[in-house]
Length: 301
Image (tube, rainbow, N blue to C red; front, side, top):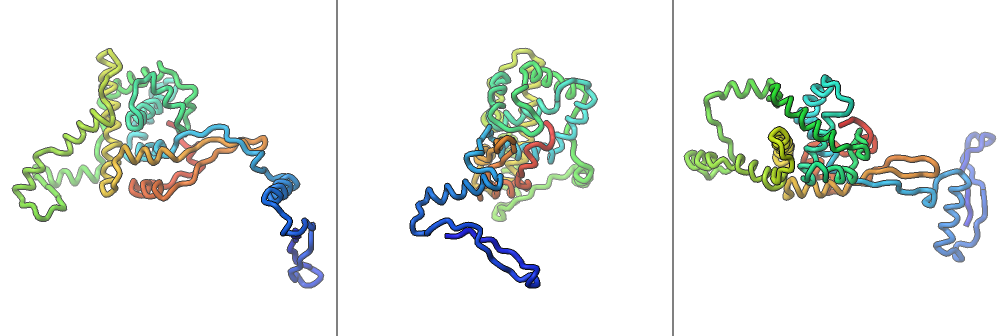
């Protein structure tokens, strides 16, 4: 077995030539471990990192956080909260802490104290979860409640508003069940299935209870956080209507996309695990772009 180099000879008008760089030995005498040794040796010669020079510094759940982050922007909550937070004058990221609490409701609802531990296992772009403090979470809840008292609401866009004005006073029901008559269809609509589903989601997936805060003010803030989480949940449920997976199971599947840091020789570089076909299908159904390594550091909560 020989190691050869291909090159173009200018003296021969740029014709391709081949020259032997090294003679390694007879191929039939090589063992698998011998090949590995040769590859590692060549990497060292050319200053390239080998497997022995690479170490995983940390790895955290990321795929579901990325999806929620993109949806948070789509529904307009990112822009609304960030704008108000910029005017507050606080020294920490108020909007980011609110968003983190909403994401926790969707992924693994727990108390605010337990949230500090949960946050250590997820990668959130723009947020150093190792520096989270419990009292900042409580202050973010108080700030959120102040916004609601000031009239903070999530409104429809102008196009949607014009459409609502056109149908004002009219009841329009659209269905894919062509076999239903008009009267039966309206009867089923009046069952208010969607509203019931919303309450079930609040009580089950988002776990509005038990309520850990004990003051009236913090209880109201907790409920409002659950309602924000419900908006994201409903967005996902609509996009996943044709999927066999629920919102909860979809988040669990996306959770397996990991992100973290590798130590390659003396440098630390970010990494993102490869997407499976299931991951790609879920992102496509949610109408979200696939995550990339650059998304690990872009944006702040």
